[in-house]
Length: 178
Image 1 (cartoon, one colour):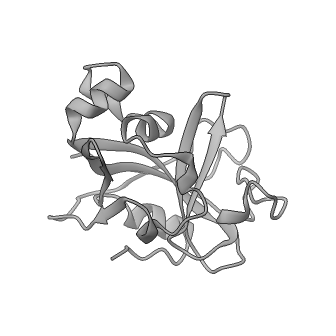
Image 2: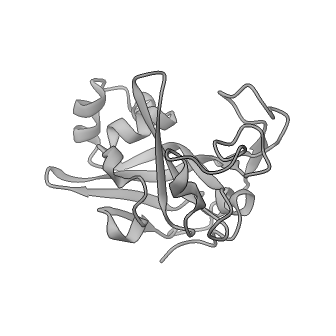
C-alpha cells in the first residue's frame, strides 16, 4: 500500500508519518519519514527540468518508482516518483526518525548520535543501506516497505527547500515533529 502520490507536492506531505523499512540480510532498518521535499518538471531545481536523460529516466516512470542519484561524489539520495508516467516529478526523502535497526544504522553511519543517523538525504540512504541498484525499480519490487502511520501525524510545517541554488523560494520542504 502506498500513500496518494498523484503529484509531488501532495505526495511529499502524504509520505510524512509513514515508516520506511529496509529488510536486509542483517535485519530490518528503518524509521518514520519526518522530512520531505517536492520536485516537479516545471521546477528549475528539479533534475527533470530540461527533460529526460539517461540519469533521470526513472523520474518519468509511474508513481512508486524509485529514483536515486549521487551527489558531492559521496552520497546517494532516495526519491519516490510521483504523478503520471511521462511527467518527471518526485519526492526527496530528507530525514527519518529511527525506529528499526538502530544498532545497524550506528554501524553504517559510524556514529552513536541518534540525531545524526538519518538527518539528511545522504545519511538516510547510508543508514538504511539502500543500494543504488534500487533506482528505476518499483518500490514494491525492492526490499523497502512503506508502512502507514499508526496514529495521526499532527501539523505539517512547510518551508523553503534547502541544499539547492535554483527555485529556492518554493515552500516545498515539509516536516513534522514526532
